[in-house]
Image: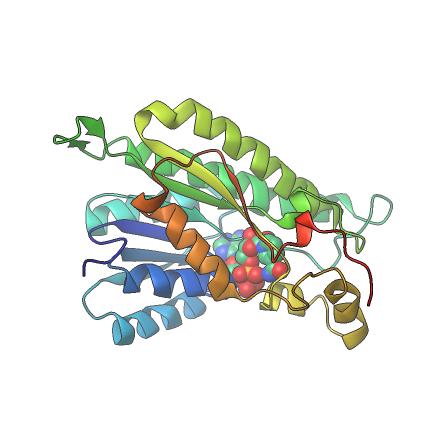
Length: 270
Ligand code: NAD
């Protein structure tokens, strides 16, 4: 059976942990050659080792980049094209939720700016260089269509609903990711480039668990989750795989929610 990403080239940012780590492993297991981008090079290199063991038929390369720097993202996309000849999937997944991100009164401007730099500008630049690379992909002669590619931007459930435990800069940045992704999806639809947002619910990854570091804080969130549990990073990786693959060929501009029903339900304590 050919993999669902057979012969494709995928770049994943924030590949060293959480959603990015699980997606890198899953994409590779489905036949993609992968470029793993992280500000923490050692973490990304560790994922390369895991892939070498699990999926010896594909190639994985790690590179250090800060998605908050345009030159770093350009270099990472250039590396993908140089190593593997093309780019089919761009997963703009890296993001932060800064511990000092708070409400309108307490959030310092430098925290706001840093969050926007990584969560929003980083996604913009990731889209920009992916689009430029995907435009160079060949035309599918059989279908007479430009092959294009799939760009997935990680937003969050907080882009859709307010969080009672405030993280204003993060919430605003993720709302902007949704708006930006929709517009880019419209602008590039006829080039065969699909753009979708992924909206995770609260997950059991370092990003959230470092923040919810007491039972009391975790319980305050769990009460709102219809399934009564946090999501797992691999559950988001499976959704990202669908968006990355041709199985989602008629989807673009979507806010793809993978949140355990959180944003659809009015739940009350038992
Ligand atoms: P994580 O903290 O487990 O992993 C994030 C990875 O991104 C890390 O390896 C980190 O080194 C890397 N990274 C951070 N800043 C970077 C930068 N400037 N440049 C390059 N790499 C950088 O996080 P996660 O939970 O897997 O989150 C991934 C995405 O999902 C983020 O965009 C986050 O906002 C979003 N999200 C997470 C949750 C959750 O509950 N965990 C919920 C909604 C949305």
